[in-house]
Every structure is written in C-alpha cells, then in structure tokens.
Image 1 (cartoon, rainbow, N blue to C red):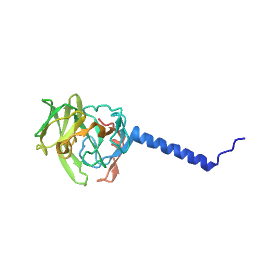
Image 2: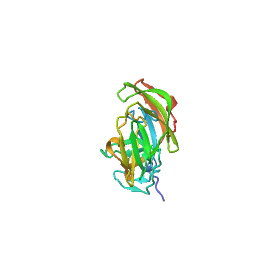
Image 3: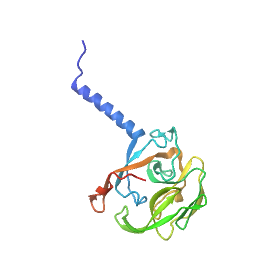
Image 4: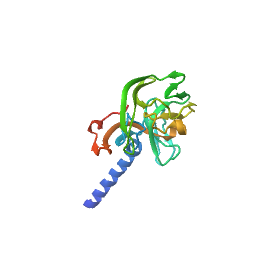
Length: 222
C-alpha cells in the first residue's frame, strides 16, 4: 500500500525542480543582462535589459574559463564577455576583428585587412550618458564586411591603433566610438571569455526621464 506524499513535500520537490531548471537555463541557454553605460549607443541604450543567448559560442562552465563545444564568433555580433582586466565583470561590445585579422583604427576610420569600412552619414544623435548628462555625436551607418549597423562618432578619435588579432581571440569595439573603453585600450577577448550573443531587448527604462521606453521592448539586436 503506497503512502501519499505530504503536500509540503510535493511543493518542496516542485520548487527544487524549478530551481534546477532555472539554473540550467540561465547557465547554458539564456541569461539577462542590463546595459549600464552609453558605450553601445545607438544600438543599445542605457537602461536596456537584454536576453543573451549563451549557446552560440559554446557552453561556458559557470565560475570557470572552460568552454565546451567552442564556436567562433561572427563579425558584427554584439557579444557579452568576461572583461579581461576584471573577471568579476561582464562587458558587451561588437565583434570587429576575427582571429588573424589586421585591424587599423585611424582618425575614427576603421580598416579591416586593408579595406576601409564605409560610413554613411545619417545626421546627429543626442543621447544620455550614464550620469544623466547629454552628449551629441554624428550618426552613421557602418558597412562591416556585409553587416550593416549604426555607430556614433565625432570628428576626432579618442584612440588610434593597429593590431593583428591572435589565434583564438577577438577585437571588439563599442558602437559609440568616442565613448567606449574597448579593445583599443585593453586588448583582445579570448574565445573562452565569450559568454553569449545579445538577442533582444525585453525591457528598457529611461532613468533620466523616469519612464519606460515602450518602443524598445522587443527590439531585436543586430
């Protein structure tokens, strides 16, 4: 004769299963990410909340640098990665240079393997910085080897340089080229540091205005 489980035990077992599923999903499938700075404007705004797909680059074991079933990132991906200078932080930037690429950044022009990436002017763009102040930059559409996306830039460059991307590494830039601390300053991102690819904005809050950006919700990140 079987005994009926107490109600509290059924609830406890259900909560344990739900908790385990949540951990697995967050660690290997999809995870939330909040945009704290203006380095990726106009693609991402301060206060955007994203879903990040964890599997496009392989499966990174939590709390380790071990990546299983590694897959190379694609040029133009907006990727979340462990910040090489402080592994307690995650950063988000755009993948610009793939392993073996020669990258030249000069006077706010980007060259990949000797070819200049075309910029088409689209006017001016005002945006809020993380501290609530306002800045204005030129808005351009950049042709990144077949990947179209918008960038902000001014008439001057904050950091020029020339690099050859090592095997198993990537060069990343922020889309807000005059307000981004990226590979131009601290170097390359190892493959094993890739956390996932940004997919969609599920919520957005404008802290400067104190209101939701309803038009951002559901925005697919490209």
